[in-house]
Length: 123
Image (cartoon, rainbow, N blue to C red):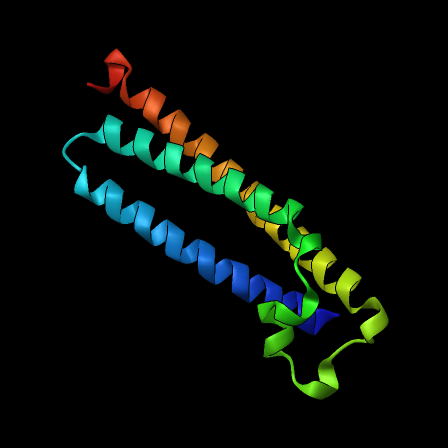
């Protein structure tokens, strides 16, 4: 099961990393307007969190044979087909929710900094 969890972590982590890179590029493009940059990054991170939660809810609907985890595994690493759907979907759901909780923390931090940047003391 550790192999499946590692594949799921790498898969979702790579996707979230690309999303964070895109959010960072948007922030850099608005570097002269710090409040707007932080607010946009916080909004996009919150949106990403909701997408991850929706993906976690739909994890049980995707056939295990069409997931990237199953395709990445060698034939001898495949779990028993009787429990494979439950195992793969549960691991994907847990991984999506773990990354959603990280996105929630990051979005709270970005919203906090956006609010601080509007304070009269920040000028």
